[in-house]
Image 1 (cartoon, helix red, strand yellow):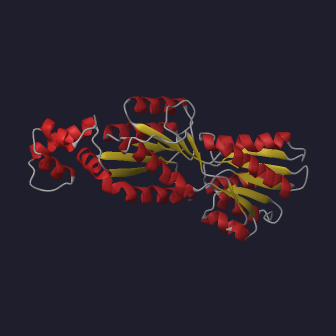
Image 2: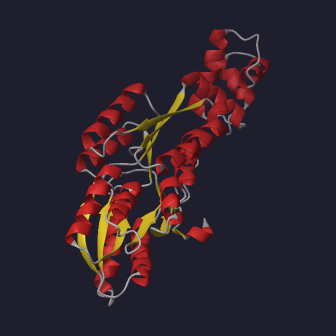
Image 3: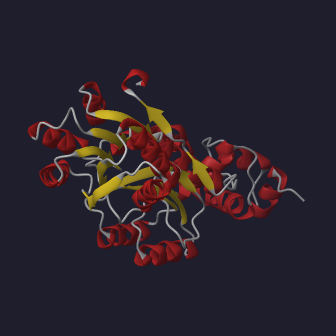
Length: 341
């Protein structure tokens, strides 16, 4: 039998009017009676509407945390906008959303953050996970303790996370190669700058790019595949090396941030009109280089949705008991030229 106001009143030994006042947060109810009613609502799952559930969650505190990658890449600020707008939508239901931005793509730092979040009593975590067995183990430990986890932007194998929200990154890497082989001559040399091998999203982009290269008859060859940690200064050094060692370089594929360093190095080497660059994301540094004719294509992935949807999924699952509709929510592979910005 469904739990009714009358049954709650009977179990709490109060009147129906008292239950109604508690549900609608009206005055003239003793703290003792209010606590009894809230306990019954929470334990037995009486949810006539979201207002009643919100009252319970406010009484207990419902904290979510969003653990992001380092903000060297301006892409992260667009993700934050999605998180913040989702928070504004759900805060009236007693939800608090904390944002944690790691400083390095280092598993040790992320483990410390996860330890801190557990101590703080978070109920749900949305995370860009470092690809590491220790992170897999820690996420599964948190899930076993009742903390629900959604991955976004970059997924991780071996966890019991609810779902993943982000781009089909292997597909994006394949698209990047197809664009490259259509804008550089056959048998060209190209360099690849990957953000980090510690993130599965960039591993997958590289996998897709290399898979298409291996199957291609275009004769394209990679002169180097190096990490830049999304940092402009590392990008600059890498491209200076590419150009010095390969004066016939024709293309560069950048899987993440640090494009300003790429552009600066190409201009300094006077190769900005000779080397075609393919990048990811629709952010200010990318747009600037597209206007300068250095970046020919960029591949968007809807950062706003990657920030907002994980918060919504956690809210629906924890607050409304609605599980995700699917395990993977892809946010698209959005090919952009200067004219389509």
